[in-house]
Image (cartoon, rainbow, N blue to C red; front, side, top):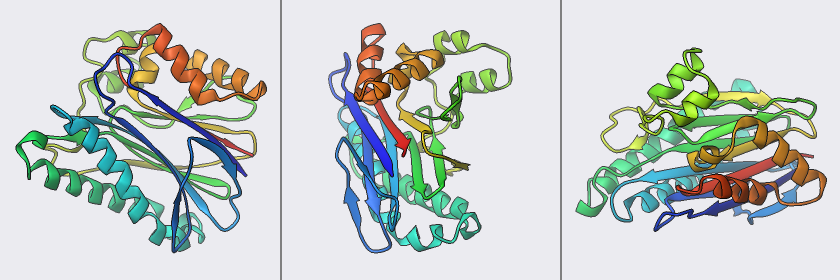
Length: 266
């Protein structure tokens, strides 16, 4: 079984350039999921994604919508391959998915003056029984919290210079989160980026494990320790952890669009 919760808030921006998606799919069909719910993994896979769009006017909002919509059409044909296990080449499947989304954004961005240069981040979790495959471009994030762990692990790598500094131990978490260039992207889908090279990986999971996908607006207001504390506390009381994370982040910062998707293995 899986349980999931998702929420997005505009924050203090004029429009929401974040988009999130939850789908259940097999080899033939794809079903959109509600903002929260639960379901069996038997006979189905699941995909959850968060995208943060960039561009003038409404171009950022359109970019993130295109990114998540493409997932609904491109993942179902991969279902049978995923059932074969890691040897099925999930890296190639996800790389192709990201390449198709990248090309779609470039096409739309080059077709209209108002969408010129549109870009988007995309962080995707694809859950099959016992394995979570993920892919990532940008500075939205994917986290993994094992059932008995006391610290949360960031699976995705921020495609920023500041992210590189942090990964190489040259700055700490607080310095990374307050650095003036923390939101300057080195890689995104669409725009003037000629090639796409997404980070891809896989994590084996067990009942009780948690995954969090979020836009950078969420982590502007919450440090890693707070992510662990708030998710566990809200789940223990039977509440909505995505709603709690977004609410707390907005209260502490709130300058940007803020999105969280929490998935729990049952």
